[in-house]
Image (tube, rainbow, N blue to C red; front, side, top):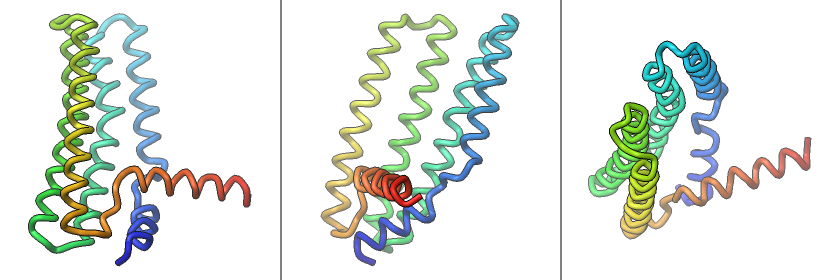
Length: 161
């Protein structure tokens, strides 16, 4: 499968239905209700983070499963799993830092620095992994190409419809 076909396949099979959005909205509304109720601050933060991050974790898992269909090489599969692990660490790490901040274990500047370091290191590692995967599979689709294709399709839909 060439890169353009892979991009079309990934775009068509992506997990972008209304389910994740609905889960996020329900979580945010529940968390806001608990927050303004002033009774369970920690519970509301947990629900808020879980409702925002769990659909992203499921979407990440789904994307990994789609990428694994493109190449049977054990090295390729290992790098794809490693890329998914990095995304999992990023999402759960941010949730963990937010929980530490809400429980007053870390200050706001420590939270900001920790999140910045976590995001920067994960982005660098993912870029390095994409570079390694492109050495194995010339037709590998990187995240930036998927985002670019998504924007182009949205522009076409606006023009056509």
